[in-house]
Image 1 (cartoon, rainbow, N blue to C red):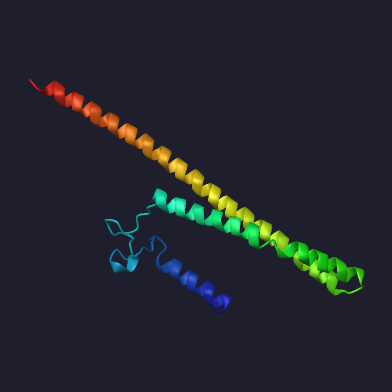
Image 2: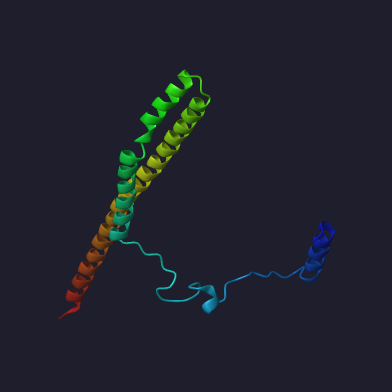
Length: 153
């Protein structure tokens, strides 16, 4: 579609509906896949078990990367140094690859640690929120009981 054609279509649309507004929306039936549907569809739920599982997997991945992904770095650095000292250009290239590997590994380790720590924080925060809500709700039910007792003869 050419720019002129696009401008013409916009002008025609503006002339036809100069005082109207049209909003697009999802089909409230099955087309919305949960939008506009009452009940459990579309409700985001998270449990302490889910948060703990994600945090645990991230921590496990961090530990495994720390143990296994760093093994080649010292050997690669030594090989690169030896190749460079013997005049091979491959030594510099190998050192570059080793350095990039270590940088990327550090980024991945940081991401795993961030996920693990965030899941722990989220778990504690959600539990704190649940406790606060429970205390508030139990206080309300205690007050309700007191009001019910007063109305009795």
